[in-house]
Image 1 (cartoon, one colour):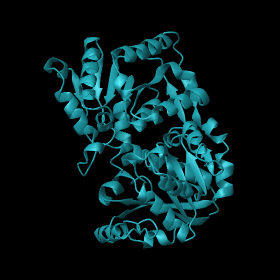
Image 2: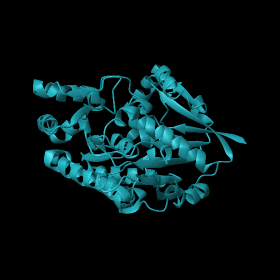
Image 3: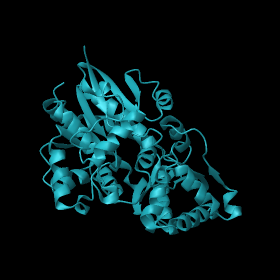
Length: 402
């Protein structure tokens, strides 16, 4: 069996969504290329932590970022050569002999900051210049309209150079098709579905609610979101529900937009003392496995982090997706319309963050509890059978020659 090296784009593994993406991408690629012994390279600013986190994956090498590369990349930015002469933040020897580059991740193409994602354009440029095939897996794309015409052309030309773009829902596929990106595109569900190919949704009425509050909600809707979620928490407690605050992303570098624990602490501080006394805040270790254990103890997950919601959904929980962008709506619409999760459509919904309130949460609880009380037989959801019937497998075999 021939050994092949695959280099992933950078992912911050203290973001559990990124850990899910890396693990799910490995599962997908291993299934897509069964005749090869795949070796994966993951880069890290915290290599010892990430090696421990991924220690169960024996075919993964975690390589450290190099401080000297930061200065080199700074020079390239100042001279306008960053994309055309892009260099990885880790030692180039780990990339030069790769057999495949894979750009992975959720929001890297949503134009946050209203600017081109230069690092990911450079990642593709590096691969293309060296004749290394490149594909994308699991990305969400939107807001191309905020770019200038010239930047939008640069972005679209970049996307056309990928051997294959595997996007995670039909809404994203339709969106980029509207921009002329279609021939090299396939839909394949979010990487978490490759990790959990089978879900059992038990008919349990809702007694415990997990709340995931993130900095993105404040960034998108303003500080009033803290009061809104404090009111929701108080209403849930008054109605007799147990409430747990559950983070899904933390920032080792203290970046406020990436730190759910800090956002949850601010929310907790906004609660009346008598409500706070009845709320549990998770402050322990954060990893995919550990947070899955925490989520598994609740009956309903109310969350803004997409992978937190999908984590809960694939554990068989009722889920209230709190939307701060288009992607939550396209994901939920697609799940209900085209996937086996349509069998439990009464148990998940999506509501914009600034409209999230007790009335809409209670509406979901009522629908779920009515379904739960109608039978004792759980619903078994075979995602794996659905995944294997998708055309992406033939397309990846044609497009990417290892």
